[in-house]
Structure formats: C-alpha cells, structure tokens
Image 1 (cartoon, rainbow, N blue to C red):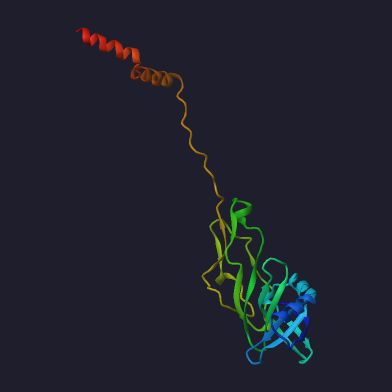
Image 2: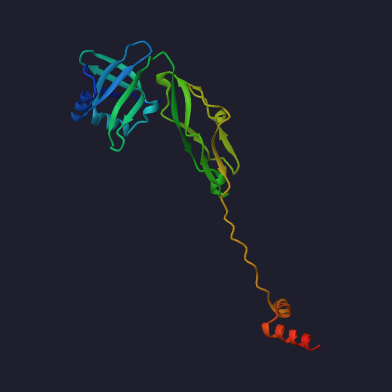
Length: 231
C-alpha cells in the first residue's frame, strides 16, 4: 500500500502576485488545501522538502500528511491534485491539496508496472507494447497501492492482457475492463527491394540478338531511302 509521507506547512494570510513572488524568493511554495467539507486553506511549504518528496513518490496516488502551523494548527491527510511548474525552470510554482477522509473512498490513477520477460520475446523475437500505463481506481486512502504489478512472463506473440485480467485488490477498478494493458507483437521485418537479375548464358545472347535486330542506325536509314529513290 501507499506509504504515508509527511510535509510541514504554514498558513498564510497575504495574497496576490507580489506575495507569491516573495514566498518563492524565500524558498517556499505557495499552496492551498481544500476538501468536500472544509473551506480552502492557504498555506506555504518548504521548497526543498517538496522537491525531495517529488523525487520519491508518484504524487497522483500518494497520501501526504500535512502538518500545518500558524493561524490554523491542524493535520490533513491529503492528495496532490494539481502541480503548477515554471515554464522553463525546474521550479514548482503552486500546489493544490485535496483533503481526504479515512472512511471515504477517493479516485486515483495508479501506475501499472510490468513484471517478467514474455515467452513471445525470449523465444519468438516479439516486442512488448505497454498500452495502458495507469489504472483508474476508487479506494479508501489506506488501501491505495503505490503501483499495480502485472506479470507478463507467459505471454506469447499476439497475446494480450486486459484490465479485466488484472488481479483484484482492496479497490474498485474504474478503467474500461476491455482496455488492453499490454500485448506482444511480432518483430518488424524490413524487406529488401527486389533487384532484376541479369540474364546469363543463352538468355543473355538472345536478349542481345533481339536488341540488335530492333536497333537501326542513322546510316542504314539513309541507305534504305536512297535505294527507294533509285527504284
């Protein structure tokens, strides 16, 4: 199941572009926490802590414990729902957190990880095509898996695994059950263009003779014209 990661945050009561710019210059990321019941809460987080977290987790399905201090002192179990990044710098500009209740299922996308080397690759020269890389599920926060492992060891060429073939867990699958997760396809064979063979032996002589009969040079044409005039 997904590990519970922790971030420390502070409330903020000043807003606007200049305030966002000031926070970023101080090494903090502006953010907001919202939920189905509570009003949204403006917070800020340490940029280094956020960057470190993003190097180790898939934020789409990671439950994060937000420990907030300042005007409001409270802890939230939350998912990151939106990440705003700088257009060309490796810098996080803003985060949206969605607070979740322990007893209410949430909808998340979980990465699909392929395990094993298929028979169709090892013995038949096939290629693996990973079609569906994330699975949409509904689950209680404590039951959200970090990833879903799919064993592809027994796949032959032209065989596939679909969503309906994925082992069930403590969650409800929301993705289309008929969607292809992975398939093994034949190798691509590039055919060399066919080259006309050069005639040899008697065939070559026949071709040369026919060409000689058809070829008429300019002097021969003139000679035939003179003979015709004399007659």
